Image (tube, rainbow, N blue to C red; front, side):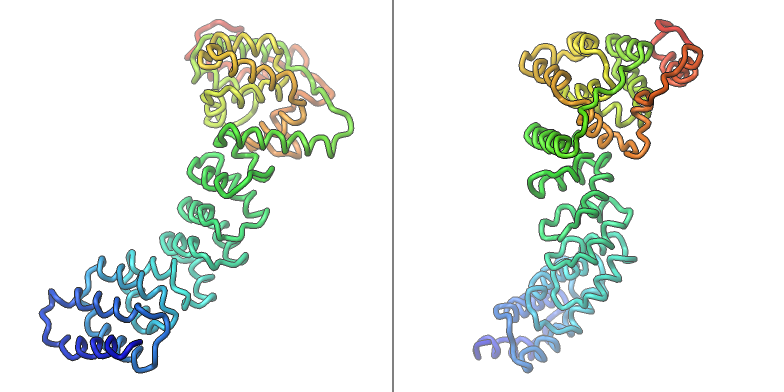
Length: 373
C-alpha cells in the first residue's frame, strides 16, 4: 500500500474517536475503500485497519456493512476478526461473505451446506469455488431456494446424478427447470423438463431420445392400441372444450398427477399432447379431431397442426413413451402409464372398474354423456 494511503488510514484512525456517531458509517466505508485498493497488505496495514474498523463496525447500518463485506470478500488478507463480526451480525452482509469470501474454511462450508439455514445454504450454493461433495450435499436439501441457487450457478460442478435429481424436482418448478436448461445444451438427463423447454430445446431432446432408441433398439415395438372405451372418453372430454375436465380424464388414463396432465393440456404448442397421444396409441383420426375442435391455436396454424400430426405419425412409440414417462414421473420399471401394453387385455367386465374412478371424478363437470360404472 503506498505511503500516502497508509498515512491517510493512520490519520483517519487518529480522528475516529472524535467523529460523531452518524459519521462513523461513512468513515468505515472510506477506510474500507482505502484498504481494498490493494489485495495484498503488510502486517502493520492489516493491524491498523482491523483496529479502526473494530471501533466503527458497531455503529454501521446493514447497507454499510454490505458494502464493506463486498469489498473485504475480495481481499485475501482481510482481518479475520472483522469478517467474523460481520458474519455475527447476520443478514445480507453475512450472506455476501458466504457467497464471496475465499477465507471461509471448507469444513465450515460443508457444515452450512448440510444443516445451515436456508438463506445461508443458498449463498454457499452460489459460490464459484464449490467442489462435488458440497454440491451433492446442497442438491440433497429440500428447499427450492437452495436447488435453484445451485442450478443457476454455472460454475457449480453438477454430476449426472445431481442433474437427474434436480431435473426431477424441476417438473413442478419452472424457475428451477429454466435454470437447468440454461446451463447449456440439453441432455437426456433433463428429459423430465420437456414441458419447460423451448422449441429448440424440445427438438434437441427429441433427437437425443431418437438416437438413444436407435442405439438400444431391438424391434421398434408398436405398443398396444388404446382400448376403445378409454379412447372414446378422451375424445369426448377433449371435444367438450373444458380443459379441466379433459385433464382429469387424461390423468386417469396416464395414471399421473392431474396437475401434470393439466400442464400437458395447457401446452399451447401441442407438442406435449401430440407425444402423449402417440405414447398411449390414441388413433390418429381421434387426435386430429381433438386438435381441430379443442385447440384453436393449433388448428388455426397449418404449421403447428402439421407439426403435431407429424409427431404422432413419425415418432416411434417407445420414444414417445420415454418422453411422456419422464414428463409425468412414471417409474421406468413398471410404468403405470402403459399397463395396457401388457400381454393380457382387460375383459369387458373389468373395464368399468379400471375407468370408473376417473368417470366419477369427471361426471360433475361433464354431465352424463358417457356410460358410468
